[in-house]
Image 1 (cartoon, rainbow, N blue to C red):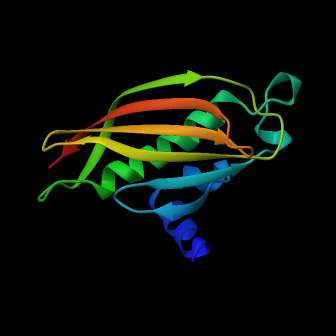
Image 2: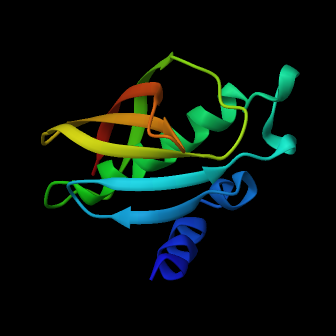
Length: 133
């Protein structure tokens, strides 16, 4: 099942294949994606690069927004994204869990928690997506 979801993710957002993201849970209430730690995704000191964390969270948030589109909408475009990094990740994996805070006719707001393999919160991303028609 997750292989099919990951194939859908990579087809819809090709960057996620380059990033190495996999899909775990996909639904209107929650989208959860995973990224394995890899030295090629790191910055100094072997820490997972913030861009990798943000890319994963943005993909989860974008898919969540898409699944919460109102009738007649064709897609979304990110108009604002705020990231708070809370701790470094030096091994294992991270999971980004995106959930809608507001799904309106013109804007969708998504909150995404990024947690490490131990379940510790390593980042939080809140993004606003404009609804396209």
